Amino acid sequence: MTPRILVVDNEPEMVNLLQGHLAGEGWAVAGATSGADALAALAREDYDVILTDLVMDGIDGMDLLRAAQQRDPAPRVVLITAFGSLESAIEAIRLGAYDYITKPFRMDQASVAVQRAIDDRRLREENRRLKAAVDQRFGFDNIIGSSPALQKVFAQVRSVADADASILLVGESGTGKELIARAIHHNSARRDGPFVAVNCAAIPESLLESELFGHEKGAFTGADRRRRGLFAEASGGTLFLDEIGDVALPLQAKLLRVLQDKSVRPVGGNQEIQLDLRLISATNQDLPAMVTEGRFREDLYYRLAVIPLRLPSLRERGEDIMLLAAHFLQRAAATLGKTLTGFDDEATAWLLRHRWPGNVRELENVVERAATLAAGPRISRGDLHTDLASPTSGGGATRPTLGELEARYIQQVLEETKGDKVAAARILGISVRTLQRRFS
Image (cartoon, rainbow, N blue to C red; front, side, top):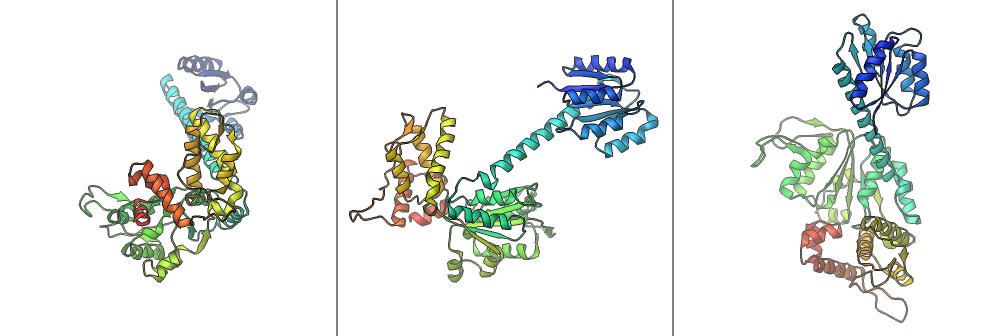
């Protein structure tokens, strides 16, 4: 869309000169020879930039600045000022004007000032749109599910979102722990700060310390430059440590010290960096059992679990299965450019019977695969291509255990990825180390 500029000056010759020059730059330019005419123009149309003389009879540049700031979105104001009124222009900048140019000026100076103001307005508008999109994506009302189990989680999350206490999210793989962590962040007082997520199991143990705490140049072989750690990157916002149960005991001790002191020392450094962040951790492991077994520090556990929140498995929120399936199908259809209207009765029955050991992530993968394979507008049982045995009811049929279902699902994914454990772990939503542990 062509940027719109409003030029305002009591001198018609100056208005005509600026209008002609700026129109030659490819912008849509309107002119006004009084502040009153400028206000009338603002009432009729939106402008990206107002280029106005500061000192005018009646309604002056400061009045136009105040009027511009009342509009949403507000146009950027660039002031034209004489040397004698420079202090007034500086005061206008303090009050929200974008820039000023001083008489006498060249036409190219006006062009540069206007272009910078246009770029600034577009950047701010884009940031505002992105923030609105993020807020909508991570608002509680946009996390799909109406089951009592999920609503209980929402109630707990709303009650703790603005607190700065550490939160530990506990739930099986695929239950949406990072989604909930992002929802907590974007509904907290820290929403304008960064959200930094790290999967502790995905980073080699030898590198995790420097990733979290940062390092100085030369701290170890390959450290050819100074690096800020993720704790420092999250300052002012939220740090999300996923799969915290996979952190080795030596690093657990260092992590505890950081949480106690609220400061971090980069590897190879000798100065502490003060921290201001909210910590959210997540695990699919039984940390209290690991504490008993000596595999996780008890003091660290209590530091992390000031507020423990348990996320329900998909088996515990059966009312949400078809809501989620319909959402994933609609999204897949849009991506594939296909018309997909829903699931037939047999497919629906299978979706509701299946135990979903991989939880929401498994459901998403199954629906996306079915959408890709489907020949017709409705997903059939045959489209839900899976080698997993579906549980049956009645007749004394033997039901597989959850462990057996999980093992079958892992085996199926490994077969589909031709034994590629990295790809399989990505599909399953777990780390390669966790996959190796469960499949060994």
